Length: 411
Image (cartoon, rainbow, N blue to C red; front, top):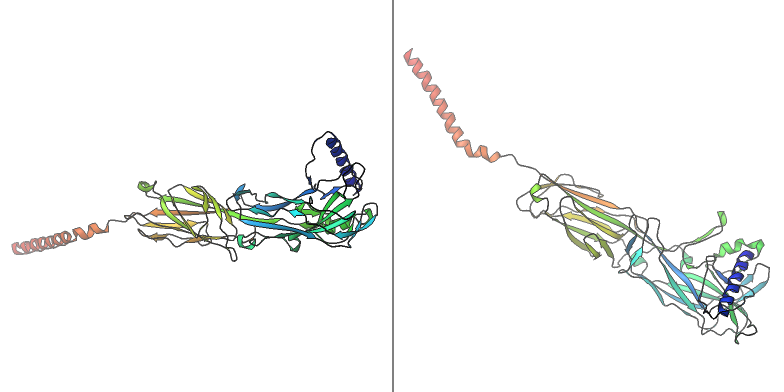
């Protein structure tokens, strides 16, 4: 903690020098340690603070998918009084309930028509939450505690997964001091600290593990403090997606190699998920994941759908729209595959299905349809010449019988 405070003090000295040159200071942002400020800063902090909201997006192979359509709103109000604060030097103070009406970013959204970063291990999609104390008049020096609350009405409906009870609340301590010579009147902010737990804060060297327990953080993001058994972890909200490729192979039918066979994909969302989703499609971008999608695929080709919410079941069916031919269809890659099923003209195959686990990392899926055209032996020819075969057989019989009778007469 002493090392952190020394570093922060150096930062504030540098900030004061820049300010002396007439350069405007930018809004203070929480550094990685989750705290800004110093006991005796050269200048007061900005009255605007930026914290972060993160959505971790997972996909087995794509680096972008469309967002889930989730939105968050934020409020800030008075927090707990009488919580004991102990600094690194053992100096103690009690928190005061936050005063005034600070303003906060009204909403953070990840709409379904906006692409977000994705990765197999999850990619961060950070968005700022701005808190302003411009209109707040502090009645005296001290530590004022505020509570920042996140609300999301449609998280479950779009398949976004949260971590635990601490995911929606943060506790912000604002450190306020007397004005110094040369400063305008009014008490000045000299520190911000954001925690995930509403508790006493002991920053003394002897009890530094307390800072692990209360979890200092930059906002509603992944945070790990401490190590070993004393480690405390927060998780950002997560959105899990997978991809589906549908391939087509044609056997013994060169005449139709370029023909696009019609396919229908039917999407069944997981229980409790009702949101509208957009997919990245190899034959159209974006593509709404409606109840069903139709496309055509020719021999040797495929279509791919990227960003399907995990837990969604996809049924895939093929139609034979060629009147003159019967195909035998075999599939691979689905949960239940077809095996040499006869597909007559204008008929559809039964759907084969793929799915993944809701709210967990998924795998890419590839389903292949193979249509084999089997030549039919010319059985009709035998029927056509049958009368002639019968007449010929009778003729040969009469000839043999006549020859035998003549030989008998001659004898």
